[in-house]
Image (cartoon, rainbow over all chains, first blue to last red; front, side, top):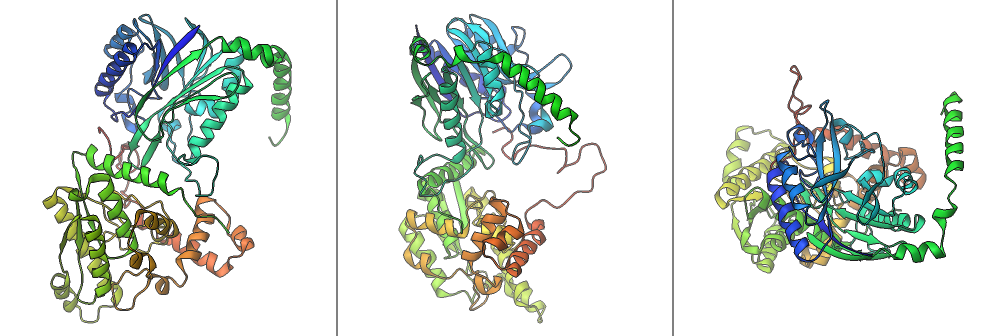
Length: 295
Length: 273
């Protein structure tokens, strides 16, 4: 089975959901015309990233009654859509969220669990942390969605893998940082943060023998640059598509989902994973940490 | 000793993107900058010309009667090479009346007056030319506080404020800044014979390396000494960085209400764009 993807690595207007929605709808049409089955947008694609006090003014509810989601749900009749937004829950807590829309329905919403609040990041000041993670079924197979910092921790991709995810969809609004020296042979033209994300997405794909798809914001917010660089890695841990650095683009990729069969026949890491042992040892370790006088 | 080299093409892409995006998102298409004849403003001029097109850049030379002819000539080299728009506004007659009013004024006060007069001219041209003022301060001087508050540090945005002097030099070379500018000793040229390194008491090369370890790499002072810097030098730089933090932040507003500017009224400058 083939999955035709469109990765939108795009710029946004900071705090203007309506303008951003227009751009989403235009790109959804374009991707659909080009034969894509699914289009993925970056973290907070409907709002922009450094929202600060704008958070409460741009929040949405991912259902039909919401005037913004209403239009996205209509568009998802023709093509599946993963979109980034701020969700306000019943008790007025705000989350960085991604929603997967298909056939006019919201299949799943993920709330960002790990909120970086260090250095230039201040997400914990403005957002509630998500308190769960789970894979979900789509017409292409079982999928795990994560947002930026979520996949900088091995724990969440690992849990999604155990929960059955064969396709990982990562959305970022990652500020570029770490200017490499001229002698770094690794990869010219990439900031260290870009190189790091490329390394770990390839590693996850290889370790979990799954597809890993990543899309990221492009543009500037004050002095922060966002580096794009959308990518797809196959279950062998190979990078098969790379979007440009620092330029907006709609990047197309065709995934051969039968690749999962071929890789896992050769390398049955998933089959051999001992999740009961993991649970046993995590329980022991956490108990031991609690009982120690200093952690 | 740390490697301060940079990926110059990547830097160029990001900095020209920054200038173009930050200017156009506010509804402008042009930039204004003070072109001193030094390497920092030369580099910013090259970046701006590439980002916006030379016809959209106004380079302003603002000599005082004691400014070196070399500075003026070097600025002209940049203007001729890039074909940016330019003007020369001497500041002598604007600042001398104030200086003469206080006959025992030291050089430093005079220098600050000149720097602030240049700021006035640039911001006035910003309105006349309908362009935003580009800052030209580099990371080394910003950290060391080697600038005039509301003088040369005043701008709408600063594309090179995260580059150490050595990195400014490397990028300037690659972008084609004229050789005489690359070669000469950095100087604020506020009085005859002034050089940055005489004033600081150490070279930019040493300062760059130490600051990179202290600030970027978060080395402790003891770790810097272990690597080979003198304790006296390390302590003097640390003190200087701390004492000049006031030049890098908004003046504090006394908090009384539940929502105070600078504390809990938090929006980016790019709000809504």
